[in-house]
Image (cartoon, rainbow, N blue to C red):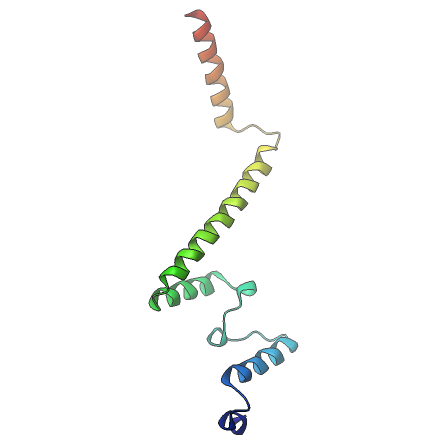
Length: 111
């Protein structure tokens, strides 16, 4: 490898590509220092990513990521709320709100 690198027949990226390919074939995870695996990342990996982006001054990229993730999180939360609203069990808050609306309608009829 050193001769291939020295002669320009192989780049550092090529070396890493070979190592990554072999590691994947052997089902061995790559160390974080060799790259970020978004599909297998953990909360700690996300913390490392955020810190590295901040330290590198990647403001535009951080802003894009915040906007993109915000939209994705909102979509998931909306789907969750919709799934929960189809449950037949009424929450205590919903019961109170319904009873309060009934009482207000009765008051409005009396006035």
